[in-house]
Length: 159
Image 1 (tube, rainbow, N blue to C red):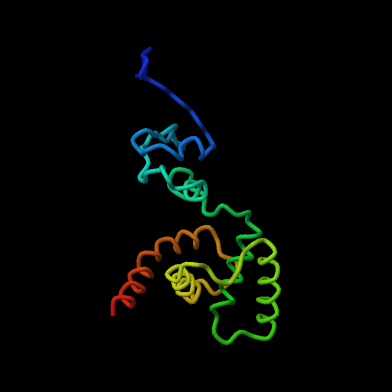
Image 2 (spheres, rainbow, N blue to C red):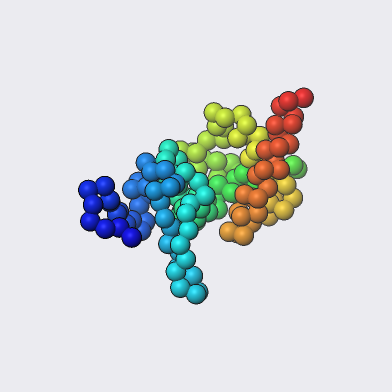
């Protein structure tokens, strides 16, 4: 219980990651609405230094992406086609169109991080992610595969 004290402060924020972006996890309490009422928990990650996008996609806010659904679907489809073997002529045209449209929004084919490039290639070359569109459930499955894919890449790098 917070009483009157010169050392006590309470800040309540419902949807602003910037407010907690400079805090350690010990200073944050998360209130979740459930069917049974309200649950209270401490974050599993330290919000300090994560940045807005990192915070929004962490367990603090739980968003699957920081992009609007249409742009995320286009990006997912581009990645599916980019790493698909034996694309049809129609798929090549679709990939070219998606690449042009996404480049207008600032997305390019390459990143500065070669490990991330390898991760994306491995993820979208898996058969279960070759069909469109990718659902929120499949996005969660992708997150669960991350550790396995990263372990594969690190094993290759250490050979």
